[in-house]
Length: 414
Image 1 (tube, helix red, strand yellow):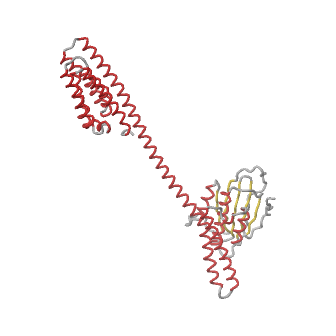
Image 2 (cartoon, helix red, strand yellow):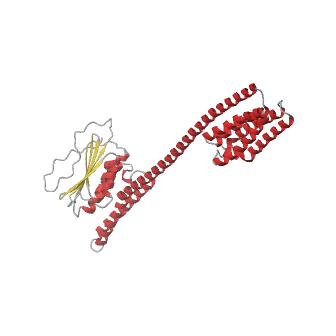
Image 3 (cartoon, rainbow, N blue to C red):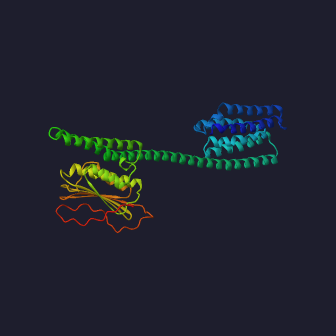
């Protein structure tokens, strides 16, 4: 913008230069030879400006030594012209701004002092005018010096402030780019984590089931063809379910089990594939899609873990409870249990806890000799049509061998 806008300074210098040349040629006083000599010096100033002075100004004094040399030459030509014809000191108004553009403040002040004072002193020594003329010219030079110093200092401060603001803007732009980059990286990482959880809770579990069913079919082909065919049908159903889940992931839709149905219905379908029963307490009401997905994935993960780790013959039950302000899902298996406090390799339980935490909920795992229970509690938004329910959280089946407590009444939405 500075390069494109420098035409203004070119025009300004041209106007002042033409005015000075006209004064040098037409002013009364010195002889024709003196005026011609002064005009020649002014023409040389134009040559100086076109030949090298303009480049110094456009670069804003990036090479200050070069700027000092070029301005020293211009000052010499100007002082000589002003000594011969005092009216040519009009060119001061073109040289003073150039000093502040190309030089630092201290050197610029020294330069404008020389530009304002030296021509008057040389003119007075050469022509010996009367005292009044010397006084008037000295006053004019002093006023020009003070004005040039004040205006130039103010302009330099404005330029410095503009540069500081430009630096701040550049830094802000850099910070914004950095924030945008980090946000993009964070978003990509979060999306990878989400897809990892989705794939683990759906496709990976389905492929595991297919492998287990394949092993069962291989073992049954020789002595129980009917059971093998049943497992083959289950394999086909599992493959279809995996395909539906894959399509849902690609399209960004809700999980296949939630497509067109309620959460309790989806949990029943998932539990049926694992031979588990579902009990429901509380009044069913519409839920935000994010809570439904978390509850469904938590159930799928807990059921898959029970199938892999509870042991053969272990029973599994799922309990879903709607309470005022909370949704509780509990999955209990009657397997041999494990040490819940020990660190375990795997993605399932940490992913389950992460899912719950993302919607403000919790996920707890308790395990012992009588089985394992995975309990997920999710906060529910206030529903204007919902009335407080005296019921309690869903309770998993009582451990084997102990008297079972009376079941909570099962209610469904009318």
